[in-house]
Length: 293
Image (cartoon, rainbow, N blue to C red):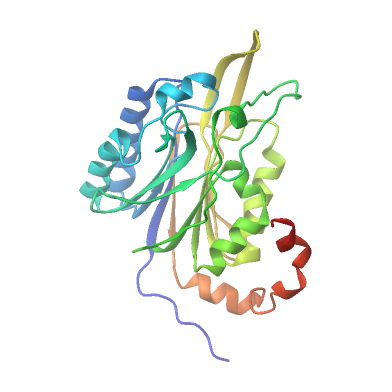
């Protein structure tokens, strides 16, 4: 039986499980740089930070002041680290758009030369106003993006998603059909979603035969919504899933860098094994595709 040969070189990738302090941009940048330097010194060629890693999640109207351009100050600083270690960095941050007063929940891809190689803007922007333990007015703050780009990198073809984008099957499938072999998902997922967390990304990785780097933040955020005080508890648990749906490496509930050594040829080997992409029947799914028109 013919087999896909293993690649000669494995690649180290990392989920940088940062404890972003709410609204403390300089502190968060400094800590991100420290943790990225750790990842780079250990040979990581791709390091992924959480969603909105420069600001935290529950910043409300203050996001307007905290938003910055891509390229901008954060990508410049992280670019210096990326260049020093010859690695790619995915960083979640609030992005100031070209139209004044419009901002996005975005992720920037920084290349080993320290330059911005790409950008992704969150597609599915959440709005939770009726839960008792977690209020999220994100949709009132950010404009959603409308693109699913794939980028050529030295670690393989890479796609990026942010938080709720990673809940849906369609974004992964579009990225994979565009060639993605690794999908990064930068998130701020609070307690209450742990059961989903440990299953969902493994399922998406298996169904698409790709690596998924799911990077969550840790720590508590104290904030006020409509005069009521809340605390959001973020549990970490960042992990890297392989193309057969297996957990390769997983994090704890503390600030840390989660590492995995991956073999890029596992993507082709998994897809050859499962035949899920060979047997894919998009011509039967008009109800899904037509509903977006």
